[in-house]
Amino acid sequence: MTLDAVLDIVAAGCLIAGALLSLAAGVALIRFPDLLSRMHAAAKPQVLGLLLVLLGCALRLRTGVDITTLVLVGVFQLATAPVAAHMVGRVAYPHDEIRRDLLLTDELAAHIDRIRADRTDRPEVSDAASAPGRG
Amino acid sequence: MTPASPAEPTNPPLTRRARRRNQLVAVTGLVLVWVLLWGSFTWANLIGGLLVAVVLLTVFPLPPVTFAGRIRPVPLARFWSRFLRDLVVASVQIAWLALRFGHTPRSAIIAVPLRVNTDLNLTLTAEALSLVPGSLILEADRRTGTLYVHVLGVRTLDEVQRFRRDVLDLEARIVAAIGSSEERRRVTGADPAGPPEPTRLEGTPT
Image (tube, rainbow over all chains, first blue to last red; front, side):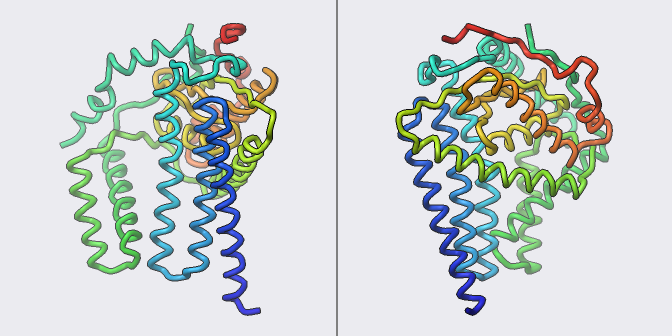
């Protein structure tokens, strides 16, 4: 068996595994009970599924120009997926989209007002710290 | 009552040298992205990337990041291998939960005060945390350096406690990889008061 054939088989395996994980993420989106649980599905199996599909593509294409683009897609996916999940979670938190009956404990409830107040009282904290230094 | 704050915020103003280094890192990163986008390394790409990076950093200056430590290759490799393993475990776990019929996963929201309260550590821990089994970052409190984490698939409060330790272990791995020696001491050294106990709110959510 040639090296090309081996790489093709590994690539096929990666693509199938990635597709299955993405399918599982989709099923989880439908079946999980509330918004926060669904964000887990959007963050984890989806990211790994995409990484596996990218790996499969890279093994199949085997050209430098394409691989650099795939690497970038993977890096940005790893960096942005948690932020997206965090943003959705933050918007959803105090509202009814969350099934409180399924929570064992909620240690955020007592602090949420203070944290949000901190943020709105001093929205310019990071800017103010950086502004004088620049220039 | 706020969660115990074992580490007061350590975000001192930057020295000129640290600022220069930050800018250098940012420019290098942006040029690297630019060259990767074009897919080949040529002088035209390099110079074009430098121009774009300088314009970007002038128009959108980055907030200051304190990076007091240095990068250690061996702990960094350890962190990455553990992280990739965790990512696989997390994905399989979610897929399994999704396909298991007649079972509604329960969850919890916990507060984890980190021991090293810098913006960089807070950010990296939060990012990594969202991709490892069971956890999703919900809110971050910069003042006390506390992360509020949504944990999926826990059944008992004991499991919640174990999970709290897992988060602190993750932080320790990150600090071991990129933290300063002072930060590493704070993470690895025996904590006389034991692990910080955040406010418990038993019975509040029903």
